[in-house]
Image (cartoon, rainbow, N blue to C red; front, side, top):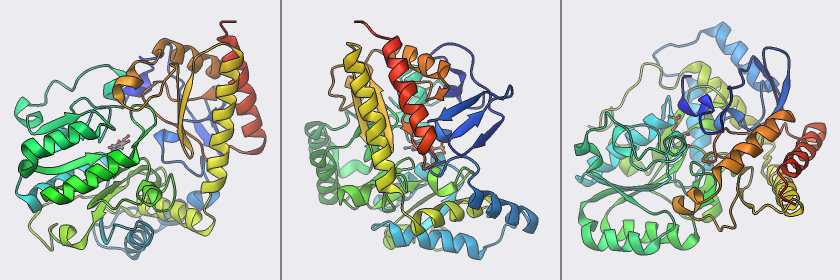
Length: 410
Ligand code: PLP
């Protein structure tokens, strides 16, 4: 495995190997087809091997894969980000979400001349040392508090608070406000399963960061271009100082970004003193896939359709759970959703962890047996793509109903 969640440790059994993808489906080496709700953990909003993305990649492969020099295409991609994300005036392309958050925090620390970073438990911001504290995603799946190999001196500079808890945010700012360089948050969390930040919580983060000269970082690696062209920030109408992007903007290739106010971004080299660089940053292949994907999203925004598709899957889960006498809470933001076997509500990492993860594992296998692939962990989001429509959607809904009734307690 090259990333731990893929090992199926949380649900048991052997991982499905994938040979190819086609629209709504992935296909294993024996030719078995699965309706795919993993979506490469978020990037594939248009489904697998979308013809425009394939054509863009073929063109770019023939024209050369990397130059170590600026290209017009990366400038166009940057412009698309700036045009669509209200708070982003300047943007830098990097290779992974991990790099984006790591670099954004470096900028925040340089701008404030402070070291402390506030994050929220169950929030996952990639695997940079100082952010591997009570993280979600694979860290949550393996139920470990952090990671060996990370010096305590690093995580001493990270304060972890409960998500959606305004009182604890107020308390840290009143005790240590003048030391806090950055608050980093997933405005719609996807790495403890899907949990939306409340207006009160995100509003308090904005207000208190402003009052204390702290940089507010929205980690929209998952939600950017997934919930809408303006990401979560447009949906909640709160403007962060810096934003991290990844997944969808790379169209399935390794590409991510961080950006924000010109005042902060001008600190990054070569304009400013904050060093950050990359041999493959703004890589032409990744940029081509990203541009092709964002191009489709801009020309024909699919977000209303995706929201309706998400609502249909949610309704099928909820209704079939009720008929089967199962307690289920489904959290959903547009095309991202997570079923939790609990009465809920699920509003933070503690309530996500209170869900019955063994029941989730049974649902995972019941769906797999019926040709549907969902993330092999409670602490990930299910992603719908525009390709899950028509017969793929019909197949998905009937598999959901049949899988849930196989878990029936009545
Ligand atoms: N931030 C969020 C919100 C994520 O969901 C992820 C990955 O899942 C990351 C950061 C890290 O991105 P990457 O895996 O590309 O390093």
